[in-house]
Length: 296
View 1 (cartoon, rainbow, N blue to C red):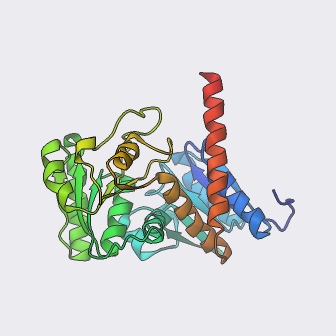
View 2 (tube, rainbow, N blue to C red; view 1 turned 45 degrees about the horizontal axis):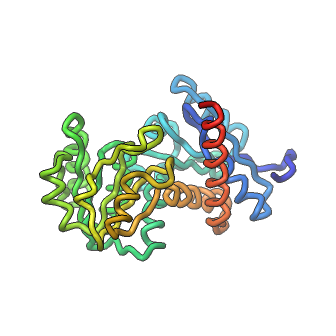
């Protein structure tokens, strides 16, 4: 880590909890590699303290900060400006301090698309099935629609109203018809043969529930791209079974690094060292896994 002085530029993360975030390791490795006098620190901030935290970071001249659960929506009224896509999504995960003017962005969306582009997947005109309708699904679906994809949203029966609202919001904003369906075997059987990309934006398969999957293996096939936003474990059951079926797979770590790289570039004005960030994130996840295994 760089030597810290009175001129060190501070960036950070606010959320609750933040103890196990890999973002500090990822960004600090990038700052060191780029030779920048920057530091990235995590701050656990409750909902009641959110406004005070934002005011404090502004007063202390933070260059910017990331925003994670549960503040991505409630941060918006506390900012001076909101990027158009972040405004449409209704969530902010990255803030840049422009000499006291705080502007919010959603780099989750941009990071998601960046990874697809790097893998050679052309979003424009593509047919995509998004599983889920929560915060991650909202960012993903808006990014895909903004890029010209035709999207179908599938969500479980208990929270189907979320999917219906998401479809209505996108249809109104982009004037592109988005269909919402209940997540069940019948709808998967009808939908997946016609799509090129399936995105899991739910927590199904996330550690410790590693045996769960939102899509049964029989629906996966060669020629399909399967993108899981989960990064712990690095290879979910969905991705493992997709690979066995001959599909191209993309893990959540790539999206995590992609959104982090965009935030880095907004704060520094420099191109992000993506591979350095990914290696740091992998080391941090491995260390966390080892500590967890030692305690169990």
